[in-house]
Image 1 (cartoon, helix red, strand yellow):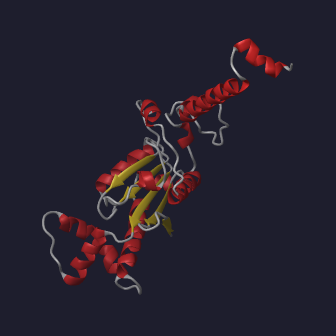
Image 2 (cartoon, one colour):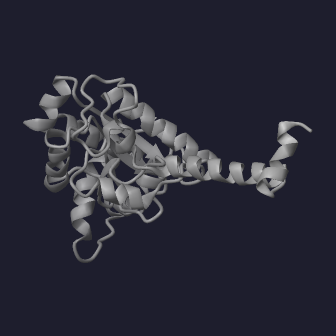
Length: 256
């Protein structure tokens, strides 16, 4: 009788039972490893960037501006295809107690249909997001991004507009038809009007052109915002780009 067959005599269990239990054990170990905080693996991973430090909660977030953009776009492709990563929120909470080091900052519209964290398939601690209807730069969100760049060393900022934007629609109505809005809504209109007026001189769909122009104008505002953002940009520590989120597909369209 072969040694394998002897297994049943020695243990009282069949070979199939033994193999099944082994497979279950190995699968459990593999699953546990998948969900362990990435900080635990920081020392074993090859360092692609010399500035990687074990003192940050998410070492894999230390990227160059170009690497950060690539990671955003890769996450968006997973989101579009429905292959989003599974995130261990319990482990993420644990490693983020002492701090954060997000790899990208997003100036997003407050529209409930837009969620940068989902659109880029990111975990907590990955994105530093500021949201306002119409995704325009103002002193408060500029200050927020200055903090992200200067203190948290975030290498990439993105102004993220989206198609069919209600704030842009309202601004078009105000500019073209002199529609008056109640409350504090006119403050949004005032900030978005320059883009609508500039787009009025372009051929094509006014709503899309205004959305695109608004993204471009606010990218320029951030790029020229001193003393922190403009200096980081000049030193190539920071990249500032624009994009439009497509509601139908979830695709991110970069705006040059």
